[in-house]
Length: 129
Image 1 (tube, rainbow, N blue to C red):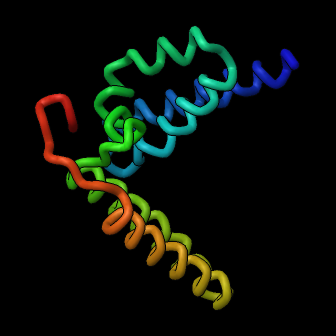
Image 2 (tube, rainbow, N blue to C red):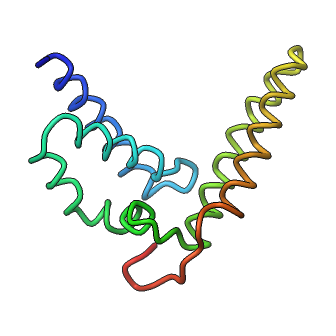
């Protein structure tokens, strides 16, 4: 059981590090990595989870979404652009795999539709990026 908690801590720290980098770099999305960190740290330790949910990084990028309030358009667009760029690279690299291109295109369309129509849009406040 301790190995499982240790793996969650390690994955949580990796997610936190990548999320922190993603909060600064426009190409790397912070949101999915911070969600990974929140999940893993919650599974590993209540103390680590409380610490993480108290950080500015969590409050600026995840808190409103986790509470069910949604995301700002700025955050949604940043995520959609990043995923589009990264999936485009995969699409280009799969020139010899037409089925892979079809799957990527379907996932991309689902991703865009999900963020536009399913994730609530909230007004940007000073606390949100």
